[in-house]
Figure (cartoon, one colour):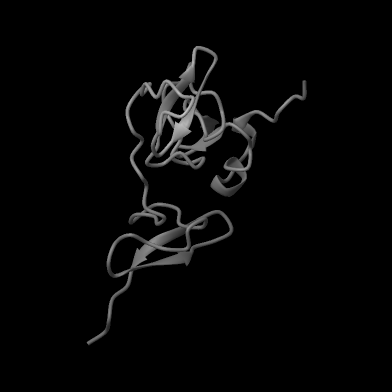
Length: 128
């Protein structure tokens, strides 16, 4: 097998999300959930950060289960292993890093670069 870089080695969210089974939760950590196409029998959850938003871990048989939006039963057991993962908006909230999305969820906020380390959602004010 090939060794993978440890998640804690990725200093930014964009780098973290290219690190295999890593997820960003304020820092880069090992993702406890599975991505679509991965076997989710042991995790019983789907990773919203790695493409599994809005998906459920469905059992195919005793040897495999994966994340999908639905299960049609054709060759699958279709038992749900865990709950459906919430779909995350493709935007950042006030105070969050918005470098990867470039968009803020809050009305009246813009994604602005502070410095080389942080790009965040800032409220805009109109002068009267």
